[in-house]
Picture 1 (cartoon, helix red, strand yellow):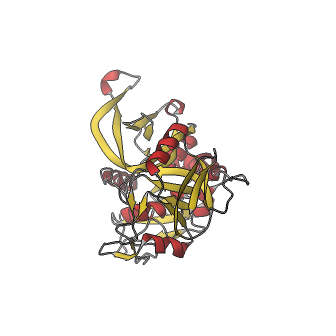
Picture 2 (cartoon, rainbow, N blue to C red):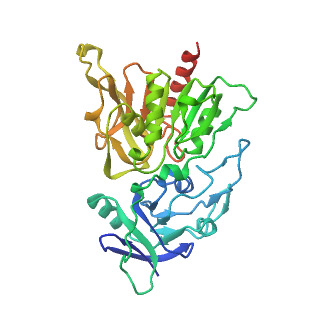
Length: 379
């Protein structure tokens, strides 16, 4: 018997699978029906216990851990599992998929990640929606169902420093010919972001989160800021480099954490969401300036609404954006900021994941728009 014990004393009982060990972290939920291997290897989940709301997890197994020609994972979103543990209603012991090489439980056991199954995840998710995400612990029952030692809140740590690369790495598109070059701040970058740039003929200088762009001797046409875990305000060094990049007029694009960091770099603010957005079914409405609104430039909803993949617990405060900056996308469910843009169009970021994996590819065109801006900058 194993128990998920929340910080408020609520206990959910189930059976152990994966690694037989205790773990603690911030308990969050994901509403996706598929994509558990990608979600579990997403560095943005660092420090968290992940609850899957879909009741059957593991039925298509786990693919191989082989690497591609560039030396990073071919099938996953990083080279490690970053969740501290997972909670599911029913884990499938048997799996069926042409690309699967392991069951979910064996894969987790190999990586030392515990799981608990047989939990009423619907009741658990309803609780997290009502009270907000909270700290918790998965523990093998030993007669003590009390959190005796305080759980360290992962949001108080600089989790980005834990998941970022430690030195610059350059990736060239196949054939060694590229259309443009970017410096990509790795704040916990999902690997499909790299794949998305490389297949578009972009050379990528992947650099650490605290890389000094001002002293860089690397050639580049644009700057990219990746997704990542934790509180964006912990990334002061990255924020300073983004601010410099914008001041220099360099085309700059951010995804997820990159959206929050860009807002902070220009003087905006961020806040923690009650339970975050994690899943592959978040609708986002695009906004544009209404040219008929006069010199003030009022925002107007467009007819474009895209379904997006998301994984974040913080958001940009719309009212904090300075003059010249506008909301680019808005969450159709709760109205939170899903993207920001400068009136010049050179600096933009989105809160969702256009690279998907898992999830829909509605927003994939945003990579093409950024790549197009790099071509203009080179001329």
